[in-house]
Length: 238
Length: 238
Image (cartoon, rainbow over all chains, first blue to last red; front, top):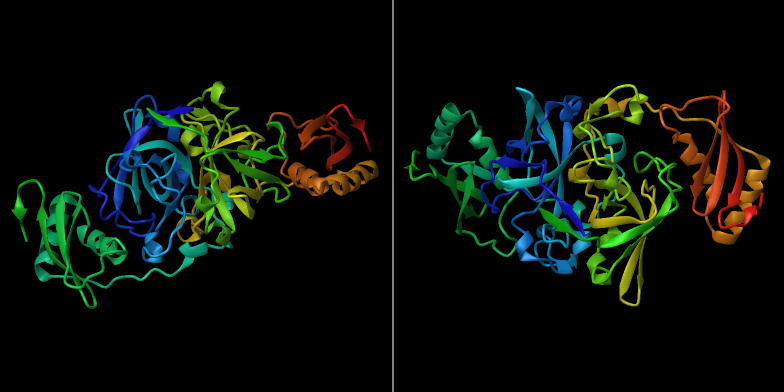
């Protein structure tokens, strides 16, 4: 038995599991911050890291821990039809629920002897406990000739259209927060967050991105984003 | 605090820390076997994994656990001269001593409902406890455009010459065990296992590969492999 303690935590735009991309790098507009806990927050611990464009976040699938695991799973990539072995998948429901994501390192920020990291392209839930940070070393981590099994099958990108009201909301939101929520919405929906079992035209969905409730409808041709509203009891600002 | 249990163990050609490659993939002749513990050894848990050429081994640096960690380290890549932050390195001495290595999956072997995995290109010590097995998915794991920091600096490959006696030993050993110990010796020494602080010409070293004691000497032009002998009280067979 091994005991591990979180060295820090990620705060991200993904406030709930629904909507989190299934792999990192799919949604470049998905930004996040890694904040280390003391004593792991001393700036010398990341000295030299700024020379790397990408880093590994080794983390705990904290919302999957209590749900346990099964020997076989139905990966969304296979349309939820086919089962594969758990160790042939990247499912969060594992005997040791440890995840690893390569993310873009936007900035190493040093303030009065401590540091935090600004990240993008994340597939990490807000509040994710982090076990380790490692530099991405392409000479050993990047296997370009790898055969990918079923994960190599082409992903169908959804067409996403934003209503004029939503566009106006996004512009306002960007002005007040600096966050490009429009790109975040489009990229998050393009990679289709729906469970494979739910593919009915006309159905509506909601997702929480930062503090914004986003609603969209499934059309014959893709997704139409209907409305956006601030979460904290502010209602629609569209 | 998180508690994790090993799902299995790696047996490899590297019986001691000295000689273990500093990254996976450097020594293709470095073979190993992953053997899962029950209940993680049921064959359905790896169904579909045979379609992948490479897998991630998430493991515990078990021989580093008791040694603790420091905020800064001297990576061998930088000749042991320069210090960098621990999180800017892949050092085994970390707050949570979890490692991850991408290795080639040679074979998934199924026997009476259980499985084991034959691997190559490992940088794993014999007896390494494994926390997780994940498929290597190049569309998210392979970042070809990554900037590498200091790890991108060219590694100097050592020239390795094998004495005729050692060559004869390797041929015999291969006949009796099926193991290509010659390739393993050459590749392991080419990537220079010496600590950065020890670079004296004339010095002799020994390394244990499988059950074979290998001795070599540092020459002006590289390494000369002097002798090989079986470990278990059998003495030289050269």
